[in-house]
Length: 436
Image 1 (cartoon, rainbow, N blue to C red):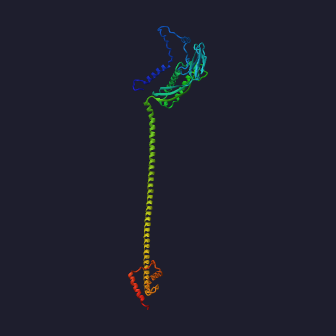
Image 2: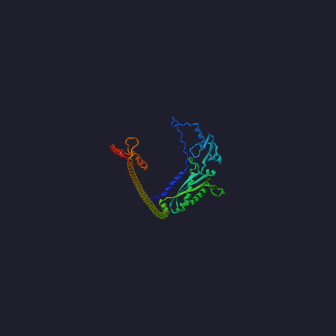
Image 3: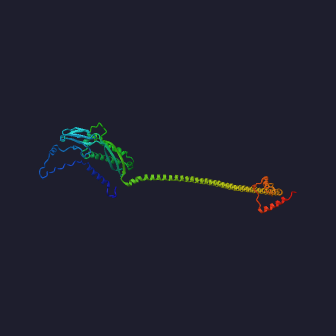
């Protein structure tokens, strides 16, 4: 059980625990009071003692709990002085009060307060609360392997009249210390006896047999025999009651053995986990392939739909552009045709107007000529004896009004003075001619 093959570590551990147990089982007595100091100024001489010291010598030492508020687990208050003292016990503590010369105690029970005479009385106060014992049992199983069993036992005082006679509550600091040690040793012995008949796997997997064996043994010791009619005092037990017994866990001492015990289960679990992982990977691969195929089909379908949509859009755009070019070409040709028609009409209208103007001018010239020829013989009757002017102006105005010339009606241009004189001379000559 150690690195050195010639050394037994388990034996050394057992010996050390035994020595510690012997030290714990020794009753702890309170330290004796220090000797009184000599009076100053009188070395080696008689010591002067007061009245209280003399009374203490006559009465004797103060019993347990007489000094109220001490360091013990139960706080007991003592009131009064000298022979007229009263002991006040908490309601959750057991007390037994005895007096010199009496075989039976005067007061016994839970939370009983009483009057006490320090010279003749004595009492014992014990906690009445439930106690818990922690157990760490180093056991050897049937396969000769070390196993550490951890548990706890909870007990309580049920019959204090029996318990204070059979158990040692004399420890001033912890009255329950010796009782807990004794019960713990009983529990460890019972656990070791039971574990020695079981295998390692049984100890680790099923703790109920250990609990049943430990409970039965502790109850037989603490509560006594199950036969209530037995009159022997030894069958009445210790006046205690076992509340509960539990085993928390069992640990294999050897780490190598613990790993070997865990290896089959871990290997099996690793195999199961690996198979589950492979199955999961296979399922995932199949699902991924299916998902990839569906995604590829969806992508191809989307690309096809997009190509069709692009083709339709291109066709629609081409149709729109072609229709727009046709419309623009038609519009341009229509506009050019309309402009040509308008230009032709305008030219025709201009020619027609020019022809009409030429015709009017020709007619006007003809009429003017006729007027000139007819008015050359007519004289102006305005003044007798005065040469009359030709009636060209009137004839021209008459012709313009008669034929509706579109030219503005205005006086004909006045010929130059010289030509006018020549024409006047000619007119006068013609007027001088006698009428034929």
